[in-house]
Length: 115
Image (cartoon, rainbow, N blue to C red; front, side):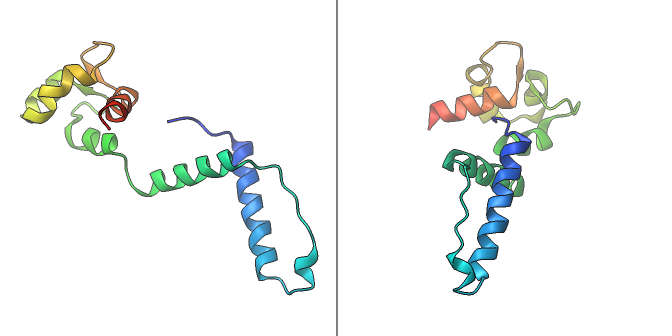
């Protein structure tokens, strides 16, 4: 997941607050013009972060279920002990750097490639 700077998040929040103020203001107040330099990419990033915060990612659910040592990675031993044949068969495809562990980045790359 790409990191979003605090400045970008702050700019989007301020834009939303100002926008909601003017949306609810009377017709006379709505004549004021507010210009912001927040790009649509920033807004999309914030929406993405907010939506991901509400629902855990697929990788987070797998880690919660199978990560026995709670290191945030799925090792081959953990997958073998889970007896999940589906994960075991695709493990080598997901483990791109062949370190016998699946990170969130590797998992996301695999999912993007499969889609």
